[in-house]
Length: 552
Ligand code: HEM
Image (tube, rainbow, N blue to C red; front, side, top):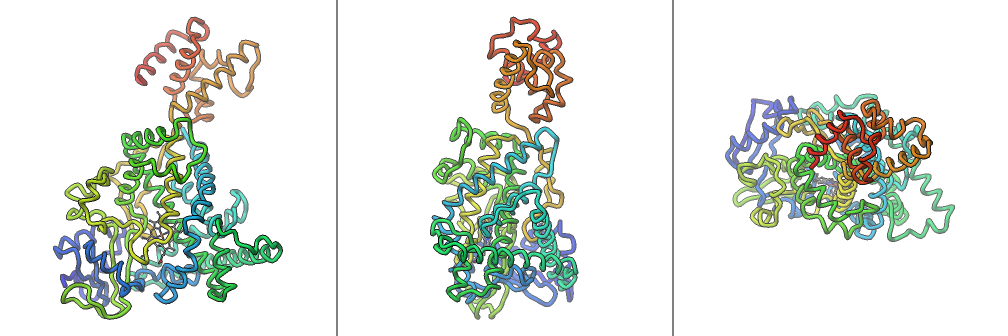
């Protein structure tokens, strides 16, 4: 096979030292061998690496490759999340069967209200950060993503601000951090370095937490007759796996591991996907505006709840998401291992236990598949006519075949419900440039520098609430009453708008120019411009005029 040997003894292992260069090196590797399928050596182990869609199709569709590549998933073997993601083929079949009702259609439909509630909580949290410059939006997305996973998987609502909430959030952050370190160290044979006492403490804590949740759940079911009759339309994973335990398919340890594995599989990936989408929207205002207009056309009067049927109405949003995740796939590579000796290509037979790596990140950026502008962000890549021209295995965010992402519809629905809720109400921007993004492989795709995002509320939505609020002020002023003592009266606001800016910004996160526009819009809508005291000073009127001409 075309082979990248690297250096004597260590092969290409040195390429993993600088994580921010890994993807560039993978890309160069394929350029060097001038093939889309080849072999690389890492120390003394050879791996097949492929970004050739037809070869990937063969690997992901054949039962001969159903095991996971052992070296790529060492960080999952920590006694906590070594469930379905890494289980060997025979065990995997049982696992997949036991957990699949959790991700079945009826169950997902019953999760819509939870997806909406979670999305609204994220929206409110971000709205509270509006007008304060660029913020760490990823932290918010991750925290709420974890809450959603714990709620749907364990049936437990974690209340923000409680001790348990803080401890659990922190434990997961530390777990993921150690898994990332472990995966990097393991690639150069130094996996033991990640086994720190803190890591073991966190594993112990998380195990205890899940055990207590299992006990809580079991106790409830004994207490209540109703709980013993599972509601077929709404089953948390813990209920399903406990059912498998009662039927003798799972042990209590299996229940613990499968619940954990599902949390790990769902929350980091979903958070990474949502964050990358928000980053792309913030960096591309014209695309954000198009997404916003599409969402507004479906919900002209704002959103009460995003329903399954609504999701069929978004063609541009869907193209946008597909493109954002093409360039930032949350799982940047996957690995398989042959179950037995098998022929991969004519004349190329792989031995049993041969490991194969599919670098999804590179697959999504190969110029042979995506054209000369493969690195450019362009949702039109997913126009139906362009999709039809490409091999379907050129794009595989959720992998393909029997061992694909079993949660892909959960991920798809929850992501779209979140984005629709956020973009309908908030406007995002960032000074970070698309060209400056450097991705790195950790457990999920990560950023060398995480872009920060500034949040604003769109003008139109504020206008409606501001008009209402000004109305109250004016009515109150006319009757000589001050309705909110912490705020200046309407006349004071108009005569000294600058002194109000901080209060305004704190309250609504709006900018000075927006403030002036609101005043103008309010007076025009109320035809009060003849009243000199309400028109403000000549200077203020000048500013209002200037600002509104920008809006027009
Ligand atoms: C945007 C979010 C997500 C992405 C991009 C994603 C991607 C993937 C990929 C690429 C795989 C294959 C991994 C491999 O072959 O090593 C996978 C497997 C898996 N995913 Fe997801 N995933 C996402 C969200 C979810 C969610 C929300 C759940 C559960 C609620 C989930 C559960 C799983 C499970 C259990 C597996 C293992 C399946 C098996 O081996 O049979 N994922 N995911």
